[in-house]
Length: 470
Image 1 (cartoon, rainbow, N blue to C red):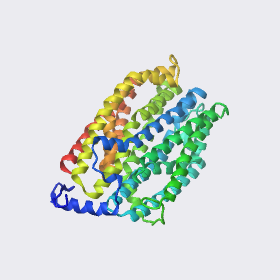
Image 2: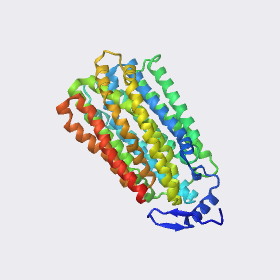
Image 3: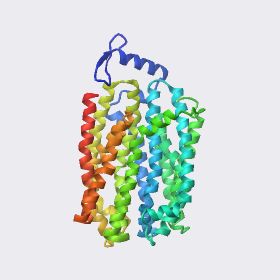
Image 4: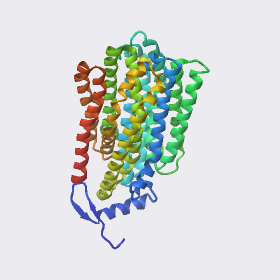
């Protein structure tokens, strides 16, 4: 191997001899045994991403358990309230995810370039920023809470439920921000298995606490919020201890206040923030349209669809999160040949999973809706009609999610943001404005499918363009 010339395709599409070997030698010499440096194939790539996939699927499971408990142990009006305040949660998650994914790409890239100390300083600075931002949101949210809830379209029936839930959840905003950061960065630190165990443990605690607070203690929707908040706090505290106790690699150190790093993190992770904010806006319109068409029952039904959709798409989200550090690392190494091979493998895997998720959702959609609301109730009937159409979107959304995450990992926040904006904002709002006035509820469900389908065309074009042109 040492006597052979390694030909590496650079990102400008040109071919250069030996440069790939020089970069590999430098990186391997500084970071021996780094799990991101291996030569991945489909088996090893999926195995590497598996802990993150399981972590996200379990997160989806305990998220949907929250909503099931609220629907069954409180009532469907409380379930509707969850969706009314959902835009606030989207804002918090969006800011945390923006820092996490954007900062994660920078940190993994610098690790790939052999700059471990700089990566650790940037990591610490980003975590500090997330903490301060979480505190500011918590204080402002509690101060303006009543105005926020009325502004989100709560009815007089739903307002008390919204107020109880949102107040408790806002108290845990800093923990919510940090647990999103640690979920991403523990993978970058080369410990995806630990991240999976942490997420599963926190999720199990959340489910248990939900039951305790809502059933024996009869705390209602306030108990659901408290269980969720403690579920955020557990991985936050363990994540802090994990990075504080590390002796080498990605760990806490004295941060360097570098606003260029913060700006690049925000810009690079902008697609995730845009996606969450677009979700907040579209959720608001979903609620408004369904409230107009079917009242509180319609809002409860769209809540079931949204949370079920999240659970069924966690496989895509987990895989995209799991492979993002690999993509960023090889981008930092400038190993174009290996990176493009990884990219093609990822696309093939996501397409295969998309078909599987579609078939499963069509087969078991009725049973899933029945878990939330008994068969024959107005909420069940509305949601069941939606589940005959919405699963078609699963054929397209996997590639859309992966493409957005992949371009973030490639430090191409512009393309990532375009995909997210088209998928979760532009096309979805367009079809929501056009179809429901003509088709009623059917137009709401079709809007989801058409938005994903049209975005799919753009995502495929971006991915193919990058694979063939670099």
